[in-house]
Length: 363
Image 1: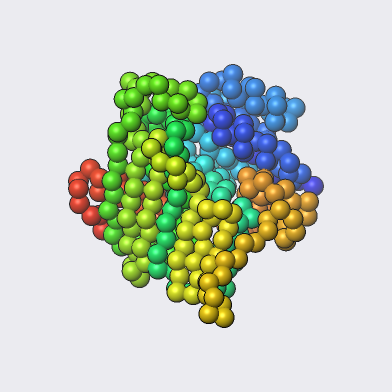
Image 2 (image 1 turned 30 degrees about the horizontal axis):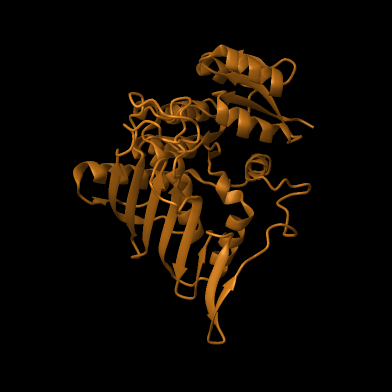
């Protein structure tokens, strides 16, 4: 059996903790090339996850010259997502790019266009779609259980969990803080379960209120105040073409006990749903208020034989299946573009103090 050959660009935490372990579980693939600006990281990854003859690179363009590589996983800081992905697609590779798609909609559109132009598959790493509760909720919304979903909340709130490693605090490299880092997951999950990708207007507020503080009780130790150039919280009010409204909340540091991350709340004409205490669906039956709570501890339909319950494992498995069976990935570049478009609009609205009007999905 011919195996898909995979190259990894960026050998930091998201690659070594999510992508590489997930790909290692899949029989039909082998990781044959690793690239990182810090060559020692690439060498270490090659030893742990690569084939015996795996190659290491410092310059990703040298890796892309290898025509035997079928798939590239882009796991670099956000600023470089777009141009590395475009170059990889143009070199004839399928691409899995970590979230967020890009730092702005112009760069994201380049990725959409490159995928369409080359005919190669492109997906973005929104692994929360592959959770059991997310899949169950999506199935219910597809069946119309909730009716017309006209109000939603996208939750990405941490009380004190600012990532202090890598370039997370660097606005130039990342394009922002919690909004673009974890808010992107919550927004993707919300748009996907609603199946609504036509934003009309966005109003945003972005705050730099706690970054100067010390003795912060942060989960990963105090951040360096002179290095934290991104927001500590951001909020958006999004109105869709059909009038549906989404409130997006995100923070790494916020004086709040309502801590929820990568969750959505949906309100429809027939029922509502939230993920506050596990997935809960609320509705009225026989003139009584009812709350339904599915049990995700046992049972359910596996995605594939021997399926792991970990979302990142399922994400990798389904991505590889999409390539092998020439199917559309669950996360499409057109969908991810809209997420980037809305996040960018929140930042822009906060800067200008004005609403930002959008034109909808990339096409």
